[in-house]
Image 1 (spheres, rainbow over the protein chains, first blue to last red):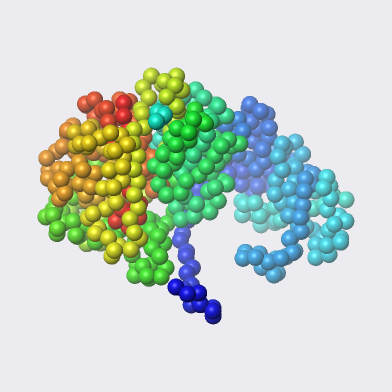
Image 2 (cartoon, helix red, strand yellow):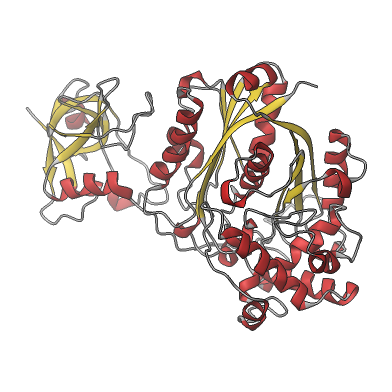
Length: 158
Length: 379
């Protein structure tokens, strides 16, 4: 079992299998809201926190979250980054990306989003406009599919 | 050895569910906590068994599935393989003396995944085996042929397992398949992989099973009828089918370890009932032999004798078994849960009508039962 000096022979294996995963009532209702340009969270009756996107139960208190709350479409940047490399699923024509976590007004969590609406290829400009603590608002796609991508990007409020 | 007691178990409804995996899991765990009157943060440790990629499609089991188990910010682990190992892992944590309570949960929504044969074909290695198209069903058919030929077991005897188990399942609210069938129905069903018939193969089910374990003192505090963990054995055979005698499986050594730990010398006498994992009908007969519940080659006679019927001397799969409910991954934990319910006398309509002091729960996965695990529970 000596190591080969040259590149060894390999077998290529690509697996595909179909999956169809139920959204269930909570996520279904959340995405119905998204189709109407509304963002819904759920409030925990025990700790009072509002979590967004809506959850079926509070992971902390382990109680069902049955109170639905429409939340603001504006919020504060908690933190952000600047993706400028490719990997499987994120190809050349898709970068750069400015991901951020955004705490929507009136909620007790922050939500992952992508900041856009200006020339984000210019990092200096991004660093000037995108700040921790800065304000953003949702910009919706015209055609809705009832999924998280229906929010096209978060626009910096100057 | 410190004692570990099963305090309480809950199971999701047997039917396919329209809930998300997270909601589906939460309901059964919440029901368990409410039943024992504990908050999730009062449980000392959590062990979850779920599938990461092939049996879930999400590939984020380690991180995503946790919220619904209640294990948030608690000592938490996830096991791969059959959920019966999560049960044993939880027992060991309590036996260590570091924890008084452990919540075990096995979860899967089989209805969302590709069929078992597509998935189990990925369990073959890409070098020698997968290109031949082998999967658990084709491997089982070859094992069945050998079983019929070597010991003169008949196809009718194998079909009787389906009739018995689906008949039992009619009395268990937590099963997937609700259908009374005859030997003729089974023998007349499609020969999908000769000699294996379609009705002799387990379905693919949605199933969450949750269980609370506790140390001896804590268990006595939480329930008036704890079920005690008595023994455990597991064994794994070599991967290559051709290197094995398919009728001489590692279940023999798994059972020997479990019996030794539980102090059982004559399993046929000591075991009052058994929950056996039979993804293919004939395997219930073969596994009974390997477990020492009857002699080698006598699995056919065992089912003919009526001993393994619900009202027999050694009921096997009063729950309906895996042929009625097959939440792959969590199915081994279901066997433990059902055995515990029989000892507690809380199995409801499928409670067997004799006292159960010692029960056996079995789990298996892999081609022709490559991996085998046996748990012994006692009153």
